[in-house]
Image (cartoon, rainbow, N blue to C red; front, top):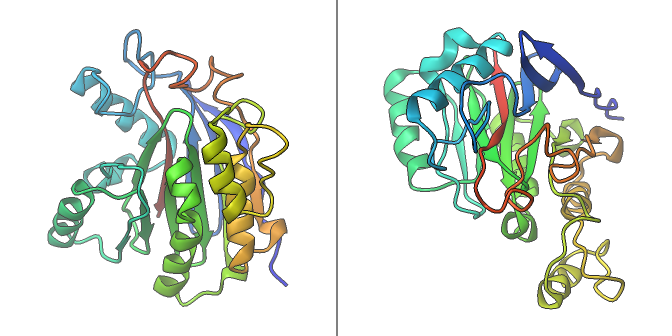
Length: 266
């Protein structure tokens, strides 16, 4: 029987606050919005380079986030994909400079999940309402961006399968962590989209309301491929209600920074 996944903790590192977890070989965190150098409307720990913020501020913010995780010495290996709301997964197996350059070319073309089995390669994906998912197993991890398009495409389950293949593990060995996002009672969508989700996921009832619970769909997809229910930890943190802690695209009118999900194996 798989052991229950450890919970995450909120920890302040000299002003940089992380909702973090550590397994035997992987460190991961969901960042908050404080502790950085970016100015309004991106204040302050904006980690997204595509939102109009000063590039030097973003670079410093990323350095601070990695430093808070004890991974500052790995900054030169940092991988940040071009997120395109798809279901493409890229797998990283080496921390060699030439190999990472090839990976950077691949993720620049667009991907929303990175599986990593290489040490000292931080992986950072950005969010501001979509669902961040971190998957951890002995020997590797994955960081996943799951908006509604990724969720209906089962991107977290696909990343889990890729992680298991890369590490020789079973889904029952995987621990899954769902980070801050727009929650099910905050996310109103069209009836057409509710119907599409209801056709794909048993947990979605399109006749009840037009409020879409992405994390419930993600849990169902992960459980459907064998991830133990006890090994799925949902932080249940709201980007909308807790907009002082996290960025929210919807709550801030489309102009805001991005917090992140970061994983690294040291």
